[in-house]
Length: 158
Image 1 (cartoon, rainbow, N blue to C red):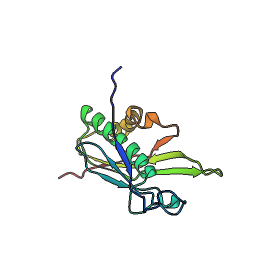
Image 2 (spheres, helix red, strand yellow):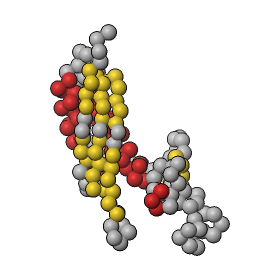
Image 3 (cartoon, helix red, strand yellow):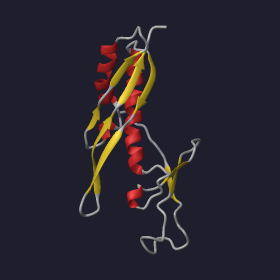
Image 4 (cartoon, rainbow, N blue to C red):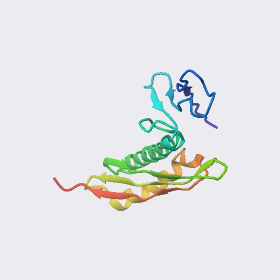
């Protein structure tokens, strides 16, 4: 079996001088780095005392699902002679907090809006979303439903 390995460094940057002495004396800020890539400034969700100006793990999970689907879909379009000229997704995730303080995602819904060239097959373009979902590495790794509500637009003739 072919394997792929990923190495990411996460470093907490929220020590304000007292460490985690109390629940309110530290920030939830951290950085994500990998060799040769720009640094990502992240925090926890604002509901959990995080910085709303930074990405949080929940944002990044939804973004990973959206990006993985998009990349799988673009690949399938290329090999099926569907010319995509624009792709935008307004992905939404739902996470439910439990009484004991734990939480879990119950679903993520992708809302890709894809524009294709006028000589591309619109029905085929729409149907490829199902196959892209099947190929998505991230969707295959989560234990909650990832739904897809795709919309296809055809470019106007020039």
